[in-house]
Image 1 (cartoon, rainbow, N blue to C red):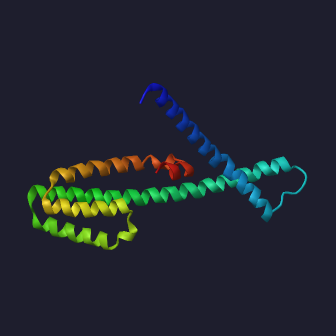
Image 2 (cartoon, helix red, strand yellow):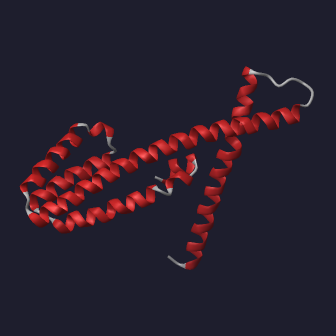
Image 3 (cartoon, one colour):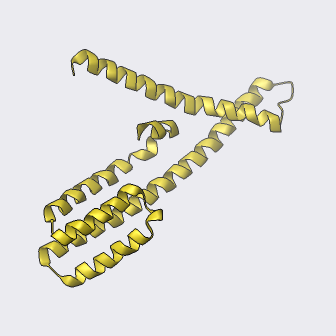
Length: 172
């Protein structure tokens, strides 16, 4: 990729992100304030101040709801990744020691997770299936590699809270 193309890509990506942020932080509160006028019309008089007040209120309510929902989603994912990482670390211990108690305990936990797979995201369920294969073949390199990937996912998910709703939708 040449420098002109890289520069164009960075400018375009930045512009799109700024546009999405502007739409979310300005457009949605305006839209909510407009829609709220059907429930409670703004009376004549000091309408500019009433509009500003209503837009600020809608922005605050919108952000509280979005931040709360995002926080719960991220916490659920981090919890699933932490459990997955622990399972992989136990599998690495099994591969290094060959202890059958670790194997039996871990396979029963993996079976439990796979039976209740609806509660986990698809990539987490697939990682549990891969773990079972790694354990059966005692593939310590594959297990350690997946531990690195899981740790990266945990760290990347720590940054997700500051994405706007639209960026989260379009970035994945």
